[in-house]
Length: 187
Ligand SMILES: CC(C)(COP(=O)(O)OP(=O)(O)OC[C@H]1O[C@@H](n2cnc3c(N)ncnc32)[C@H](O)[C@@H]1OP(=O)(O)O)[C@@H](O)C(=O)NCCC(=O)NCCS
Image 1 (cartoon, rainbow, N blue to C red):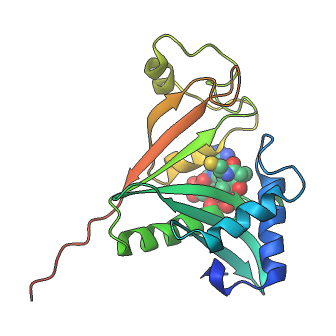
Image 2: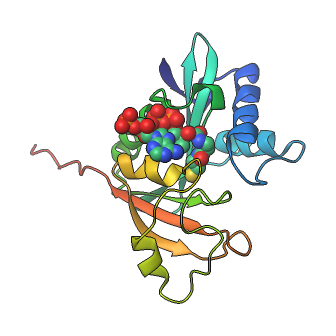
């Protein structure tokens, strides 16, 4: 497997990235005609965005995007692995590659929001106010689980919880990770 920037993908591979975005994510995002393709294009067109793809024999297996929203914190958005290739280490490899890019650009923090659309955590489908952060501290997996627990394994920690972000009982869990600091060299 190799990890390359979106700029080096051909039209067929970019179309594959859009199909993975449409099929891998839970919830209604990017399901409408042309929405996933338009989202993929933003990572080539907008200067505050970039993306990396995992390829095997020229076929795209998954991809990760980033949005430069703050001066020193980079947002991971989105991360999608082809459903037939999940749990093979591709997601971990993509996050690691993104971290390398982020450190090289001088970012100190990587952050993300991971929505619970399917009740994959104990935070879905319940009233989170009041004492929102208390419920975040007690989060546990339900049903077929959730990407939150993948990110925990990769060293992210919960930093916030937005109740009803996507509708009643559909929260967004905010997570972040400290990036290694590049120390200035003596010259
Ligand atoms: C979440 C996702 C990106 C993970 O990618 P992946 O390639 O399947 O994950 P990896 O194989 O690299 O997993 C790395 C570790 O996390 C664990 N893991 C992966 N998904 C997990 C989950 N849903 N729950 C708990 N642990 C999980 C793996 O078992 C592995 O653990 P190990 O190192 O102890 O063996 C992928 O499943 C996916 O695309 N899901 C649908 C889209 C999505 O939810 N994206 C995130 C939106 S914020």
